[in-house]
Length: 463
Image (cartoon, rainbow, N blue to C red; front, side, top):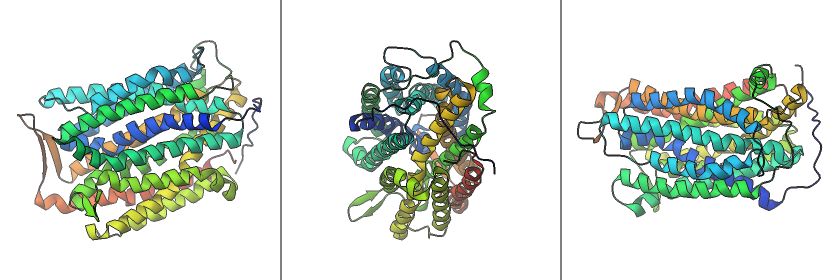
């Protein structure tokens, strides 16, 4: 297979980044990935159907519409970020000034207004689309920062590892504390989510702003003077970008199905939260075991990559781990007595996720360098926007498919004439609903991991 040997013409910067800067960069994904996106991925499908009161069809349609919206906004945001010139730099100002809108809209999205079915639909659709736009305006420039903070490939891997550790560490804290914070807040579930949304939104805003102030842009990108469609056209001539974008979508499908269905699995397959020796294991805590594993092995990803010999080999081994463990989960009995077996398999799966997650963002930096060398103009923001778009596309489409597939086998939700949330599953449909939920957490992710193996084999940058 033809290999592309990437040689960047960017001047090396001998000033190595400090721990404070790497920690600051980690705060950005701790806010975006560990708080806002983690809650949106794991809690939103169940929140919208069982607490907010949308039907499964409305929930699926909402997420599908948002993805079509992102197909346009993410690349445009990347192109806009590439052309930004301020005294704060090219990408950092988007974090500094986008932090407060990010936290505010997130908080409003977790608030359940006392509206009827139409009012709730309008509220959810409007705020979800605004949230996606604000998230894009912050997260695309955040990802693009990796391409201008250093020209050293090893340091890019370190920044990427710090980013993943920050995301998974905060995800661990968020998910583990969620049920305990709910009990502390008290009241209805709608009230609990509203209070936690406001609190977590404020924390995400502070961390995002801190990331903008603590990081530095050492490299000056070669900027186009005016807007042009040429960079968009060049993207589809960029073979590494095509394969990496498909890989990014698959990794987020893999995670998206598991996160979106976890709440349903604990509720309808295992009978609700499981208490073991005083530890409450609900759907957020269940996935927390994976978060802490991803945090540890995300930090070890650079060393694992050195051991494997290349990013491609390291990614391949990681995808194999994910495929094998996902298949194994399918054969675990659907019984709370096996909760620790399930947790053990989730931990093993998360070793693979932890290894490949930092690699993906480091590979986007490789593709950005390749594009700059080939085309003579920086398109770092545009290329990293595809990573953000893949993240949102994979997570939301998987969430939409979870809602649609559950609806197809008999799961019914909605809001009655009094504005109360109603969930119904006929006794004759319960087995089909449980089987679908179990497959969405195991067999379907396994198939996606196998597709990842094919794509990484075809990926042409052999580093």
